[in-house]
Image (cartoon, rainbow, N blue to C red; front, side, top):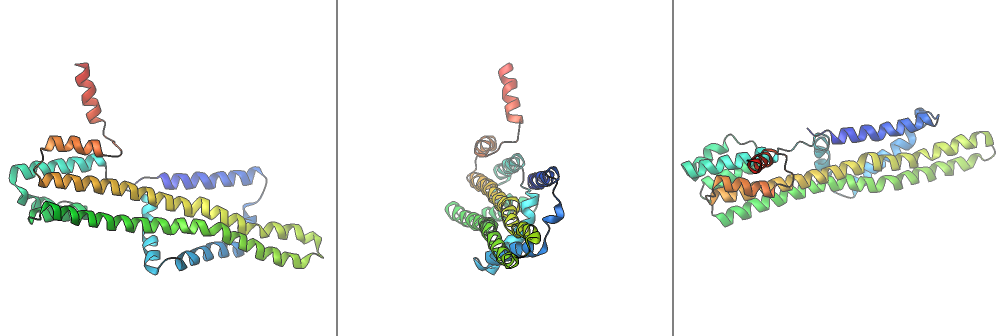
Length: 263
């Protein structure tokens, strides 16, 4: 689990609370139900209206992933592909069907089964690229939904403020209540900006970043299984995949290289 989302939101709202207390204000003055219902309810509603029900359900299902953000390690993935290359060279491509049973990733599992079934290399690449593109578009749809919400929220907050101010102007004959009423009216604008920049846009950007990482890893798997099918030498395959990895978390190759230089 990558806690960046939780840490970031906690720090953001913590900074807001710190400002409120340092200014001597009250948190309860911001927790007014009417503007909050308008901003959150209308933002969700117009986001649904601007997409499809299927997209909305997809976005809700993707929400836990934004907070967990769990992706397999590139190093573990490369080691797995190198092991599969060793098995294929030692026992033949049919042995990959047995190896597929212990694979958790559906993308890699289907690729190994297709190799074991004797799928042509060009046909295999086309099939995997189509599946990769489908998964990426699905991830981007969820990310875009929350980014769209981040675009609508500030404007909806302004609408709430205008509605409240229209109501406030009806009581100009009561100056003692005019100030607090105007302050309350601007709470809608606050929640519009707050929800957009503290919630919706971070979630959309986070899902988009996770989609980038997943696309990189699926591309790594695609090139790996194609090399396995072609009978690539395991050690060379490992070096090629490590060079392709967008984020190298393994220190082993670097450490080994430094030891060789010292020798």
